[in-house]
Length: 97
Image 1 (cartoon, rainbow, N blue to C red):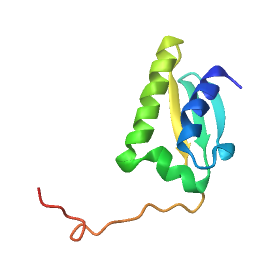
Image 2: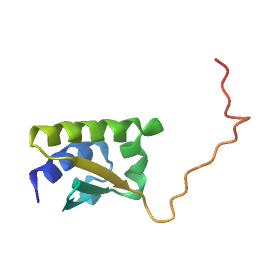
Image 3: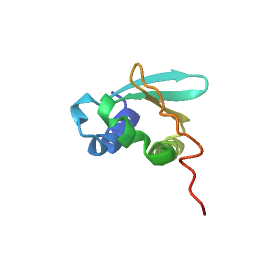
Image 4: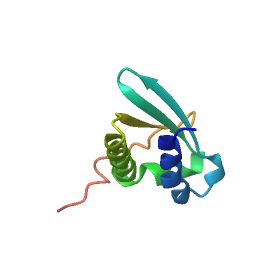
């Protein structure tokens, strides 16, 4: 396992209820390093976060880690099979400012 994978897992495991299910897959090509993250189905909302803020923050930290080591690191969070994003009704979910 590469250092960037270990670094990502050290960030993600404390956020999960099932840290033993965290796994990563690393692929290198001409564009850089792609790390695919797989977690337990129940932990996906904790990793993605509200409006994707947690996943965005993890991606930023990985980009900084990659810049320090002269690599272009990209993160892909793999969603469970059959995952469907819940659609909201725009009328009932409207909040006045």
